[in-house]
Image 1: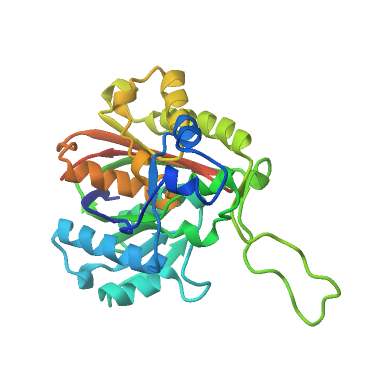
Image 2: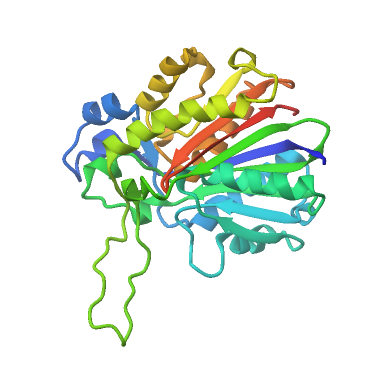
Length: 325
């Protein structure tokens, strides 16, 4: 089997910045309340751009970084919780927007772990030789499924996108790990889709089509699985945590990351954090952070990096990468 390497990254966020102070004018909260509990100072909110628009702009950046044309891409996978539509997939819309006429396209839904699931899916296709160049994007316009009257959720999330291009290589993705538990924690974090209403029903379900979350339960779950995912992806690889140059975590809450660092006895400097500027962008958070690192010149060839995330489902996972750019 072939190895798979990352050859380009890209990202895009809407221009509109919404600060904690501005949020306090529409919901009962304050900058102090949000920042001390989450580490978030501001987030980006779309003023009309849909998920596919954000994804396409990040994708074009990643293609430029990889020095490839859109027609070179034969697989597009988009991780999103906030698609443009049920049909077609956001990936098919992005295919048209960027002109990737030769690509097979589909979406992956795994909440905030979606990008890790999408990345691992692309890795398997490339390893088997089925596809050559894959574009993997995490993109969200969570503002359209947000309850702006619920201060427990609306202060946390933001809109954004991140992308990467993968191809077969000598080095790159060392190991991936994924897990799910829809039995014990499915109710902790959810957002219903369309209600089941038809002429043959006497009563329809009254469901809420906005994000709802049990914060304390998600927090405990997140600390546990983030730590275990880091340990799990290192198993059987002859790498230890001391060999890792950076950890790129899902950008949900600074306290979660601090607890994970303490639990594993890792210096916080190993974790790249940008949630203060963007909030929780769900499936976009890891590739958005990675592209920021790449643009800042933090990543050097040969660096070993772990991506680690968790999300509704419940889902969680990690990826161990040797940086090759």
